[in-house]
Length: 325
Image 1 (cartoon, rainbow, N blue to C red):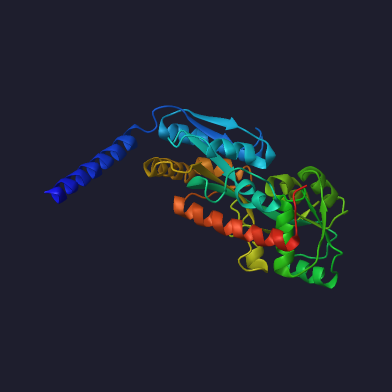
Image 2 (image 1 turned 120 degrees about the vertical axis):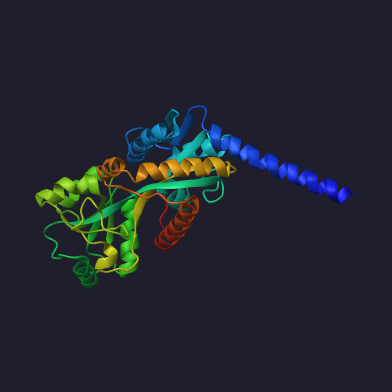
């Protein structure tokens, strides 16, 4: 008799759980959703986030509020969501700099980037483009590697600053190609690009929008892009991987996360609507204007990509002994 009662209780609990999930799936969302962008307004993450949240507002039928909480390299925004309720109305629009790079640069946070959040969907990615000054006698990546091996430590590459993706991409390139390059950090993309155009440094790994005009004018020569696949916006440019270094990839990427413990029903709902938005031609064009491309996929795919990216930069940063300024 006791066994029958216990079985009945378990069945009732199971049915109630299924009903609760179904009810949540039908009712969510029934109020505005807050998406924290852990950077100031106007930056790349903020621009991409606003493209996406506009489409999500349409798909979910609720207002989505973009909440810019910049500071401490993204830590402030991340901490805000890590402490937020797990009801699906508080989300984080995170970037690879926050989740994959900063932890290895000594940036302190009260959360664990690998354990404190629930992955929902990867939004998009933006590779760098490898450009050189026209005086550099290399027309392709293999020739550049040959030149660097012949002149170890002579070729200088600019970056947007220590610990930025442009810096780390240069380090990854040097490590994979087994060459020695001289790193010259600048305070942002503009001065790095200007000095490369002036010939004061030989090469630069830059965000596509920051050098596209210079590439068209011939003031900089593009050799390759750092994504896994060619960019739709510049299909004539080969990837570094296909040119010389197999499996080479370095991209800024963005993902949508919730606090740890957010309902799987909510995750599935947001994931489905986001994926539908990302495959539209309108979204592809919007992201391409910022040198990015849509990603999409499952929560598990985002988790796996994040882990691989996190591990990759851990090795690069440790080997180069890089610390944040």
